[in-house]
Length: 255
Ligand SMILES: [Zn+2]
Image (cartoon, rainbow, N blue to C red; front, side, top):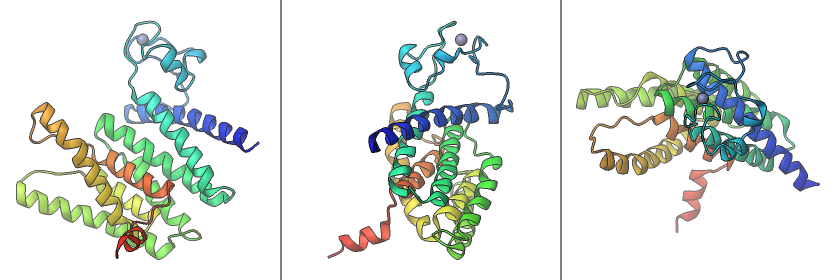
């Protein structure tokens, strides 16, 4: 029975991921989420239901549009699988606690959508980050990390990246990141609390360097702009769904 429930949770996650793909593509383009029905952005043909099954259709179509052969971005199955995995982990770690599950659904959906839009458009739209900050604070009224830590997390999240941006600008004359990054970090602080700001920053900078350096070498570009929101989303996701407590881990590792 437990296995059947997990399979259902995973499938539901894949379907939700399919919806998040629609949000990632349509919101920055200003297209309504409700209509028209899904279409190929290259040839405009509507996508039939049997070509719209999460992950499976991508494999059966070998990543190409049935009509014009245009490549379907790998982002589609990746977002679906990421969301499916997220649902499994949320279920394993937080059920049957309904408020925590609800917050998990909202927070991880925001992270996945922001990562997807930043990866494709180098944008972190206010329409997600600002309500995200508010939602994170509201949930913290009755859930961990508590309202004080949440408010401090939002304020210091915004302030710390803003300060970094100003110092970087003074030192190099370049803009290292944008205002969307500050607001997203404020949202992460509101959900995870002030104590998780440094762990998120550490993990996202580290993964950013690990991905960015090889890309800079391959593309032979010194000032390659990386979507920092993608790495911030991954780091926050890891800490949230696995309930990682970096401070506790480092204390335990000390002799
Ligand atoms: Zn097409």
